[in-house]
Image (cartoon, rainbow, N blue to C red):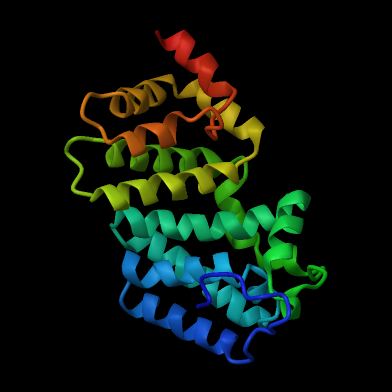
Amino acid sequence: MLSAPLPEDRPLPASTAVFFLKVMETAAQTASALTIRPIYLMLAGVGPGLLDVMPEAEVMQFQDRLIRLLRNVDDQTANLLCLAIFARLVTRLTCPSSTSAMSSQEPTSLKSTIPTERTSRYNTIEQFFNRKRAPKTLDLVVLRVIFACSSSSNLSLEDSVESLKLAREIIGAVNDEEKGLWLNSNGPKVRKLYEKVLRVGLAQDLQSSVCSKDHVFDPGINKVSRRSR
């Protein structure tokens, strides 16, 4: 139920934060895409504002646990889910229009001005999208997309489509300048990506998801593609 926004006139249950922490605890104890996905879905439904009303110590613990999961779990979808959770929070923090859009979907009980200390709360996860770490994040995500589109992938079509959806959200949290710099220095990876995407036999859902005109790498992707031919 909490994976979709509640009606405007329905307040968020008081026990939601406690339930969220229990979901986080489960993911920490048995890390997998299956246990991490509910965290992502709750933040997509209830909204990132859920963390605004939680004590700072619990928010910091939440971040630390997700970072450990990202580093220690060798699972394509689980890795992307962790980064997509970070992207959702960072995008809300750094993009006013995105913040407004997300806020409009959050229950009335969570709509409030973002606390002034919120930036310091999220310094830990912002590093994945800053100038120093963004190239590594883009490397990881693009390699995951290449794998999802590869004939040797052991992912189901549903998992592959989910991987691309998550990848778009993660890359969308990186600013255009950083994406442009990455594109200019990673032509071979981009060529490899499109070789996999355009190969004969790849499901149309995957091809259309990567090759749509609003692809997150536009407009830089076109420049790199032309130069690499």
